[in-house]
Length: 208
Image (cartoon, rainbow, N blue to C red; front, side):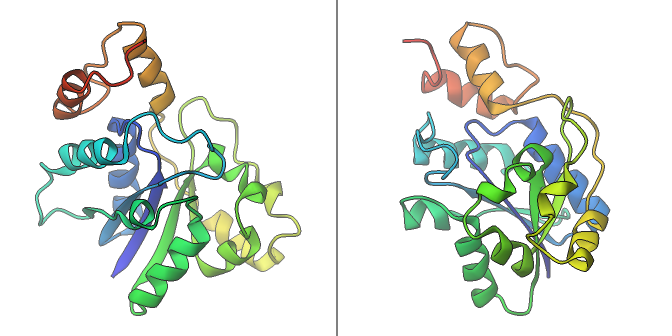
């Protein structure tokens, strides 16, 4: 199987996340996209706002309507939450490769996150283990390929650049959605209806 790893806080998951999964799935002919919610991101030590269980539930609500026969298949993988502590992508990739040696893995990475790749845990090892598929969100600057200098060989850098995909510019971010809820503004049409209903029912992200 050709599988993409899609990690993040998903706090909350929104239409932009789903568009990334679908768009990359079509362009890369993926069989499966693994949504892997982080326990604690090393670059976001404050942790998520919603609980682990709430973030997983929002993911379940968001992708639950996708038909099992659709490609790519969307799957939630809770290994980082189950592992606890700080979530390092390189450890997750290595674990998946050990468990599924016959599968080909790719790593979906937004250009904003990719710009910080040198701050990731063991970045050189990660970039040799798995090819990052870098995509741009709306309003993001051009991809800063210079961050690869000294991390990988020139040949590997060319392979990574060739794997980048262009997606529709959807200007959505989880932090903006949390701010909208906190200020009493609507998130209708920005997240799946079931996710919006869950956020309302759980009183998530409201100003205290």
